[in-house]
Image (cartoon, rainbow, N blue to C red; front, side, top):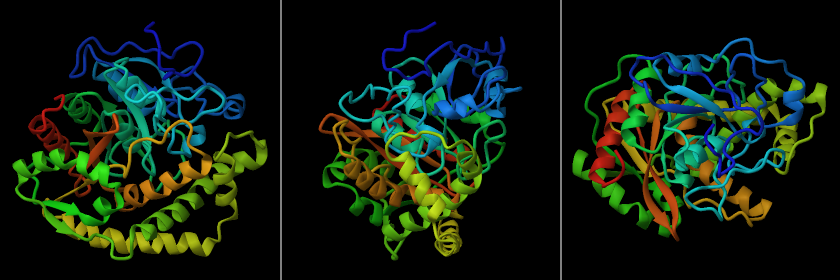
Length: 395
């Protein structure tokens, strides 16, 4: 069994499965976030009380099965933030994975272990989940490629829920071509074809720290060389704060509906931040959740019309690099709110988003996001590979 110098894998015996002898992913290895079931193993979901109160899975999750049938071999389950409800990657029970690209900073969550495993070169592909940014943010923080696919495009059967109307099964890779190859197996057929023009979302660029925006200029230029000069747009005149608040409330209602019954029955122990988020979800005014869902419909109609002809949004994946491990809870929450105002664009609208490791700030990675209309995942992955090549990144 491969070493785990960054603490990416769940402690204890590894969940392993040999992939098919032949297939499009034959010879590649993958890991899976510990919210995907593997037959015979308890899915721990990042929390000891969850593991204690759940029986071993009786079958592999569909996404796991799909990768195995394509020839990739599973080499272990990776750590997650407790019940996938967090963006830093901290787990007080099993240990926070080291960010291989910036060891003094958080790896990002909730798919922290999957991102760390790929960034450390321990696996070729790693499955994660993305509800509010849980693939995109750790990919940006760890300097790797990641995709949040169109909502509903990749099966979540056999995966633990958080916010079912927003949950997606995403994945990471260190090379753009591997990210695309995994998509050819996991995604439904269709959606290929040219994309363009490029739309620069000014709201998100202004939201980013100036150093992040500057670090991503070369990545933006690479995309412009392929699709032509970017057209600047203001996507959310209501403000990104409105997107964050709408997403937060709508997702929180779903999180409590999905996990509240277990929390009430079990009274589990949670680490810092997680307790507060679930308490807020429980206490949320239903009118606030309804308001969030109503705004979601407005934004979906606006953005999907904008992208229907093939246009691609481009903006910083995260407004800043990963917080330092010494950041206070208040500082972490501030980063979370600023980040989720941007991740909510794809989250609320069900859009595919690929993040490219296009820059560094003070030695720490920052990602550039490309976003397309729902169902254009395959075309977006192909474009991301072209942009990565034009930017001199690993393809």
